[in-house]
Image (cartoon, rainbow, N blue to C red):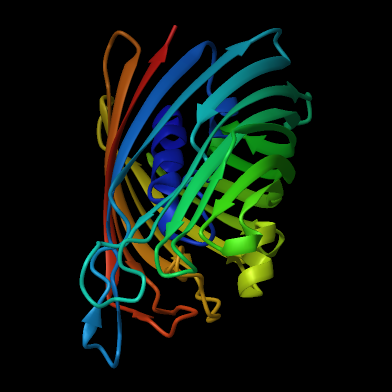
Length: 360
């Protein structure tokens, strides 16, 4: 039950994050640190968004503006001493891909935007005799992106180089193994990428200039506890300081008067679920996720606001130490009015994924 819960809870909590506040595609869960011995896992998921809006009183449709995308992560953990352990996480924890279908009467037809990012996090955890533990480490992240806005100027374009930045992670946990109780509080620092932005299509404001992009700080509380034999309750609360994030190229801001992308409030995401072991080989988990709408005017490059989702996963444990976890999540995305007055409503997504874990 223990290993299943760590694997399935992490998968169900992170699938389809990019449909929620900001541009996240992972919750950066620390569950890998609490595995036992030497352990590695590879996770793959595919998200199928359904995101469209209308203008003109519902007469002109944008078409589906967020293509499907993949998430891939690799995690590894091992003991160094009886008290000290190490973990390494490779993942795409943020990202964005927006593509308004070309043609038609929608004002932003042909608009595209892509944010490419990946990170590597190295972590250490030290366990005290009192059931407390502390953990922390460093995160190295790379980011870059491109934007094409045919409706702005003579056809606005933005292209950036790729930059590497450094952040850190700090956390504390308390456990009572006899009842499978664990509470973990994790802080992820903000970090700033120093990019060079090359802009075109806005006359005298075109050219190259520095562009600073801050990936925001976050705090996550994860908890679990046994509530009956072979049954466990788990959940999390996560706050992200999205008001600190904006993409504001000099030329675009001078010509238009506002950032290209910004968030006017922070997001808090709540997850609760239950796991159940049905046999020595098979376990299952059901989770519910809720993220309140902030009800502000959103960017046309991020036309979502809040969500409710339900996820279902199962783990099959083999005799050779290999575990396979598969799951699905269905989510309803909150309604949004964008800065051009477009109404995005009745949108949803489906996500599916698989995790292969191995104990050595």
